Image (cartoon, rainbow, N blue to C red; front, side, top):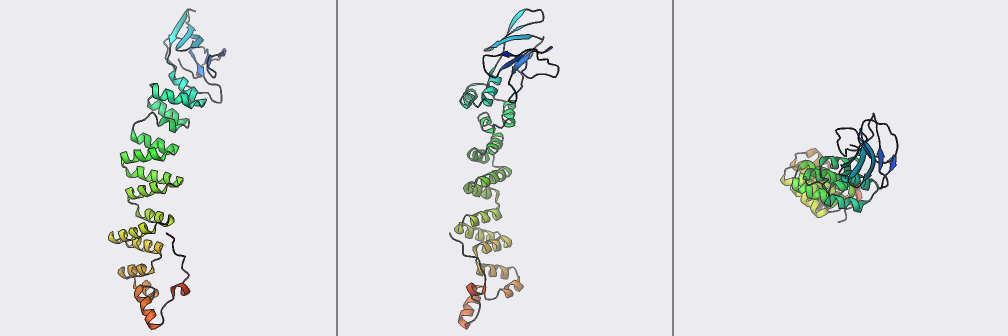
Length: 278
């Protein structure tokens, strides 16, 4: 017994149910009913049947019907699933949560149904598997639950996905944590730049130096506007051509220029961006 009109079903009549939105169909070869009127109709299996029946009434857990010998029969059904779907579609969230806590609805089919219908936040109440919880939490934008699941999973791919969603929400604290867990130093440095965290940006520059990451070291010095550090990096890299072109910008060059009354005046001779505000 289902409440999805099959291809070979013929609608003979519609009977008003006790609950608004429920209908009963009498097809030719299958007993089906309890659907929802369009455009909010849905379908699913209520009970399988050995022989065709003709539904006359549905009340509570009982289906009153006639068999092919026209004998009255009463079948017992479990209306939990379609009542749950009906409450969900009618936005009766108190009733939905009550059924989630008390009814035995847990299963992949219910979770898939909730995802398909756009209710991942409700599906979160059903699952205990951390990977599934993580996916559902990201889908509905629940960063806190996603963070808990990511900590339990401790998977690089999960941290990367969480970082992307947290960045879209502007939650830079969680973004920072994600970049730290994945050791994404370039993005971490840029995050400190745009949030004005110069102290941590200087630490990133020192970390890059310890890691012998010349590119990252130079990039952080560029973010900080540290000309002397950039000149020192270029010297260590053997980029003498760039050092000669920038002669006078390092600490030694500035001191020498002051002693000789020459050298470069950085503020007058260079169009530098304004200093970062901490």
